Amino acid sequence: MKYPAEPFKIKTVETIEMTSREEREDIVKEAGYNTFLLPSKNVYIDLLTDSGTSAMSDKQWASLMIGDEAYGGSENWFKLRDAVQEIYGFDYVVPTHQGRGAENLLSQIMIEEGDYIPGNMYFTTTKAHQELNGGKFVDVIIDEAHKPSVERDFKGNVDLDKYKKLIDEVGADKIPYICVAVTVNMAGGQPVSMENIKKVKEISEKHGIKVMSDATRCVENAYYIKEREDGYQDKSVREILKEMMSYFDGCTMSGKKDCLVNIGGFLAMNDADMYQEATSLVVMYEGMPTYGGMAGRDMEAMATGIYESVDEHYIEHRIKQVRYLGDKLAEAGIPIIKPVGGHAVFLDAREFLPHLSQDQLPAQALAAAIYLDSGVRAMERGVVSAGRDADGSHHYPKLETVRLTIPRRVYTYAHMDVVANSVIDLYEKRDKISGLKFVYEPPTLRFFTSKFEPL
Ligand SMILES: CC1=C(O)/C(=C\N=C(/Cc2ccccc2)C(=O)O)C(COP(=O)(O)O)=CN1
Image 1 (cartoon, protein in one colour):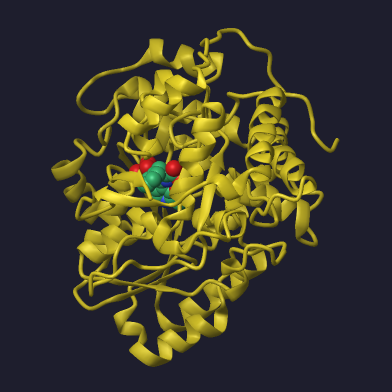
Image 2 (tube, rainbow, N blue to C red):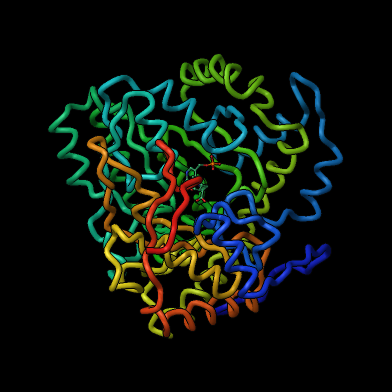
């Protein structure tokens, strides 16, 4: 089916309030036109992020009642370890409180001052931890990933020539690993093909470079392989995922996305020495290697969520609900990144607001305008998120987007209609949307707490 009905029935509801336009004028001003700073109670449909915002199942809630909160050797830890080994196939698992916990460990273990870390487009926290440890991120994604209207089945693919060129230029000994994100968040939730992963592995093995994955949305990636790559239509998402992860030496995981939990993550690997290093480091930052900053109940909920995430009906609905919103907007002529990604619809703010230069912060302005119009909260993924270069000037990304990020198992198609109607109405009066300017800018990861004013 083009858009399958929700494969669940609702047992518990959390009411959502609608504010008035007048109220939202004051609320957004108070938040400095930054959607991160909006109080949740004043948000009607919250599409800020799919991170930590999924609805847990009844089985996951039941997990909370069997939390073994022993300081060492929690029963829930063994359940989580077994789930990771069974579904992703890695030998060793180090639990962390969320994805950044795993990125911190991996970067400290693998990166030395002056190293280069190639990857398929940057992600803010991943790049921050690589640079914190003296590494330099190098974007090796295919050029098409930076072109919103160009459609490709696997727009998240690594450009193998760019990768080989980097190896030739800096030498394999300066490249501890390549980080392959599946899917690519900042490119619009774009997948990587199995063929591309295999080729990256082949090149890397030849040069003794490890292949790590940012596996945060790996189930969504597996679904796209099933849907779009020859030879995989008859395989289950679970089988495809296992094969996909078998080409990696390890992965960082933010459990707050595909693992269907509100907190949690892990670093997984196949190398015993790396595991030894990670367990001695994790006690500094996350706690014992058998809880890693999570309560026992959270580890149990994540183990359950890992199994639920590879259910065919769940993942088909998840992908197609996002596609439903994207298709509605595209049909109305709204400029979005194509093809529609796995976790979000990305509005092309540059095309949406051609009268604004990037210095007038179009994506930030559009996110604030959407909230003002309908109480829907989206996230800026443009020049504000990209931060500043070493010389202090804005880093101007090619993609200036607003991300409408769909939480898992939370909203219905009716909510998608509300969002689509609001964006379409706004598009008709887009020339009334003015730019923004900074009135407060923190030194790092500025998109979280910056404040703005209309120009
Ligand atoms: C591909 C990928 C992610 O998308 C990711 C987090 N995404 C997030 C959460 C976020 C993080 C930073 C700025 C804005 C929003 C998302 O809203 O998209 C992390 C960090 O995981 P963590 O949040 O659990 O630490 C690692 N890799």
